[in-house]
Image (cartoon, rainbow, N blue to C red):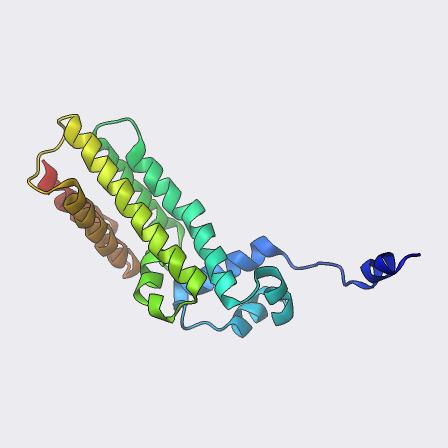
Length: 202
């Protein structure tokens, strides 16, 4: 048996459940705040060793980056799809509101927006996670801007705001709605808030 084969046999089998660990980390960051949960605590909750976590993600920054990527895929992309749909602007607003409110109903306690939460502590994040935060924030603004531009072109909205200004406005209103969700405000109150916020485009 060659030395390479002996080395392979001596290696420890990989037992870490990557998806489970990502979900535990995302849930912990989302509920308690990314700066309030240690890697040691995440390892304890997921039932993995710290060296095992580092082998999988490189370091704490790599874990947070992976959590952000997971959040984008499962939480941000559905939001983008809601406003990209080929239907009137008002119908997309309704779909967006329903998506956010269904999220509130499905999670206990309600989570709010993990990207928004991470943005507030970006200076305390590692380089890779901080770069991803900036990338996803910029992506969100582009999606809102494209939505406004399309609706304006189709004559569905009227506003003196530029597309860029309107995108920033939408971003702020959605962030506020997510804060209301995290505070467990009544569903009807959140829905009314969103409809009032988007009424400026009528």
